[in-house]
Image 1 (cartoon, rainbow, N blue to C red):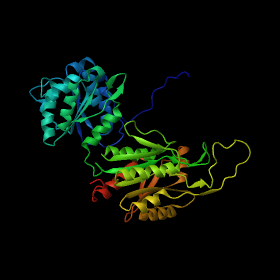
Image 2 (image 1 turned 90 degrees about the vertical axis):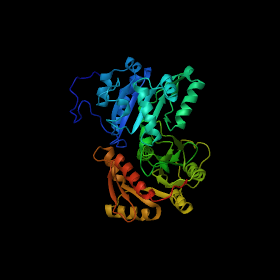
Image 3 (image 1 turned 45 degrees about the vertical axis):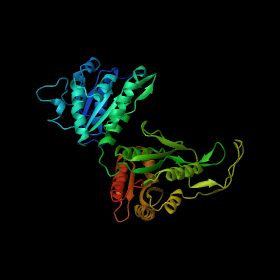
Image 4 (image 1 turned 30 degrees about the vertical axis):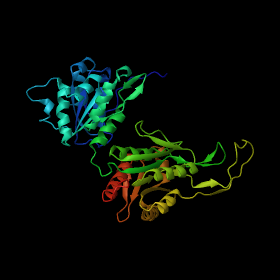
Length: 424
């Protein structure tokens, strides 16, 4: 271990209570964070700040028991708002002074879940939820609960209460199962559930296929020809789509980085498995769009060596072009809106745009960039720059993975908002 040479941290424009934003999916949204008396209440401050990183304004309401595990001052700092621990003449539980877009109960204890399901309103949290249920019935808010308790407390009583709440429209966020307990999930899955619940995006309920990462062609049983790709752009797009309420089918090459824990993905190790998996996914359920960002091998060997070729001597391999999966999908599924990706090298901007616009005219849209931008990024001299080409529009410059993801999502929102859902 190296010895730290004490020095002040770099200056930051953020104030003490401020958070660095990670997105705007909860911008302008008011979220009530209801904290009940389980040990997991100690995680509530981090959850409040994670909600704020998506732009939310958070107000915390605590039960008496919750104050055994987390302090009022801590949550006031984390939320940057006053904390409600007692109901006063202002009738905080009715939300007259501030209408909440969603009520999030995290952690939601056995006691609280069963009380709310039975209509008991005997405290700050339960009275607030009684009013919230009335708003939910009228379509004015969303309610989410995160069941958190020891496994021995998961009884038929609890199951019936959760089922009753779900019939009323309450969203139950699945717990993280570990050591015989229903544990509070990490902040990511909870924030994602809130974003999806309040989303009004035209992508809500739409099915979108997203692919990313390297898709190699096998040389033998252990070697392959592959393009270099981390899959991080595809993951950023899939994450943004999911937070807007889309149902995402994510396919990643085996060498891609891991997506967020709450975003499930299929993994494929070579091009033939990739083609077969996409066909199976699209045959099983109709999809409205496909974002094909995977770096699929452009060449494959004329002959695949069986087993592992000995690691001695020279090895001459004849490569032939692979079939273009994107063209196969376009010809076989004319109703599927496709966003393709194109990487070029050694061409000027005009040539890149001409290629992007030609691809967009055939597929629906194309995200194009120069390989030189990747080299520059590796040396820390530039950001990821891409251009989104759509028929009838000037190509849009996008800088950074977050901007690329937002650009693709906005394009799909415009395109799909006027189209009937594929699953309708």
